[in-house]
Image 1 (cartoon, rainbow, N blue to C red):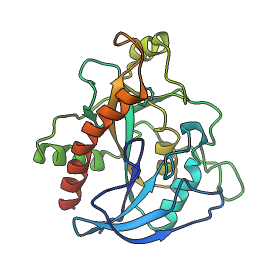
Image 2: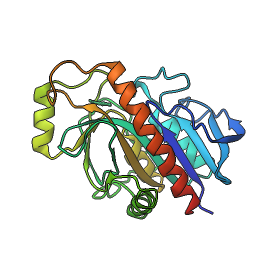
Image 3: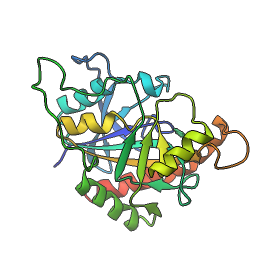
Image 4: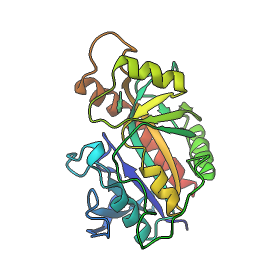
Length: 246
Ligand code: HPA
């Protein structure tokens, strides 16, 4: 069976239905990962879970050691990663609590350690990133959503910003013109690093709020948490349905 990992973001620091089998505290050539890697059983199948922002949730998006996280998963034999992350909704369908399985990325981050291919351990390699996400895994997740009766957007462009602040309304306008449907802070370099290590990676985005300037008033953490709470119920169902199909 393909070894699966789930990386949980804001609103998903633990998988409540996971029966924990073991915890691996790894040190990696790239430093410390965000948290222990938790191996457990979900619906009778082995899954490794990693809390992207640590547990408790304390690591800001730009401070996440993406290389240590992805290297650690590879080291544990993971072949497939489902990356769950909260996003802001930009285009019309991306209302709070909605789920999207993006098919494209635009990277607006800077100063993040974003590649393995820069030291003597690896020859210089330019991976193909035309289609950042693994199509087979995306299709399986889209099928699982249909089976579980969860309405999702099966495509979308994920714009990754630096954070931790939210965007200005003008930045969101520019991102919309660029073609972004959702905005998050953690999709990159995570997706590229997984591809560098030849792992099948797909993202599941949960809309926490309308992006800046898309509604009146301020975006509050309370609003984000409330919508994530609703969205995560569907995420849990989607993950279980996907796992049952493997
Ligand atoms: N912008 C960036 N990242 C986010 C947002 C947002 O509005 N909401 C949740 N993560």
